[in-house]
Image 1 (cartoon, rainbow, N blue to C red):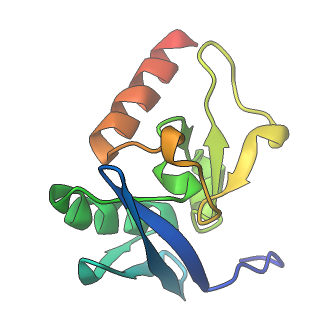
Image 2: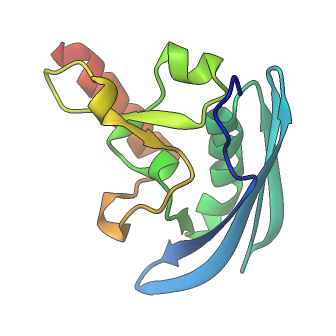
Amino acid sequence: MSGYLVPDRFEVLAFTGGQQADAVLSWEGENHDFTVIADGPWGQVTGRADDCFEALTRTREQIEPQGWLLGVNGSRRDTWPSGTCRDMGGFLVCLLRPGLRPTRADLIQTFHHAPRETLATVAEQIAFEEQWSQSL
């Protein structure tokens, strides 16, 4: 990833209702062919896409029907990758604030821990990004 080293395995928390459980996220790939693997109470699921954010999204779509949310920045309601972030593999996402364009200070790592109260489903995250885009 052009000089930027990202670990390929993350121990994270997953949440459902009022419960939490340990989970492991890992990724593999390069050059617009990435796979994200999520191991947790749901078993093992994988998502494959052009970047790690999209592969994470495809993984989330498989566990959300069972009520699970992954406790990482890529699952926050208020994050989305810019085109540049996607070109760099999707390892960074932007914090979105209505009416404001993200700056470098708004870049955070996709797989780092996120608090439970910031998490959302894929559909909720997409809706927030669309509202944010319209606010500019």
